[in-house]
Image (cartoon, rainbow, N blue to C red; front, side):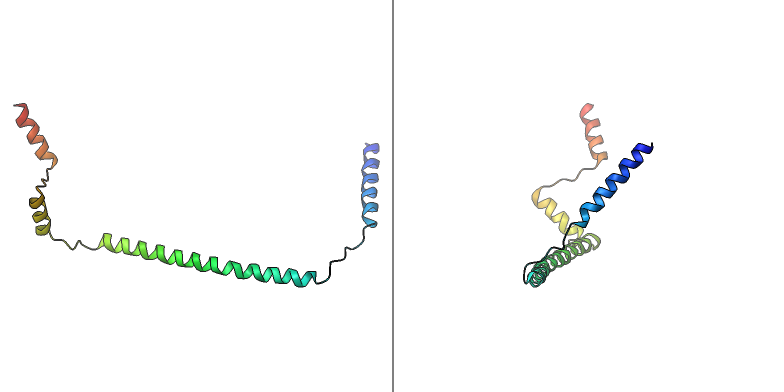
Length: 108
């Protein structure tokens, strides 16, 4: 146990001693000016994407509102208009009772 503790302390000392030899790195001239310019350009590029996102959200909300309005408002066609369309195209509307009645008359 004593041996492991000494090894750990030696490793810590070696690591700290290796950090002492490091010097501060010098940035190239006008580095911060160029960095600020890039960040500003990146900020300008984000703005059109936000506009597209807001426009898409507004269009989706309008489509949903129109869908709900159509769903909850009564239909513009009255029953007589629907009956006229049914008779014109020869459409027949059967209920389940009608089918049961047809099946019982065919089986007799």
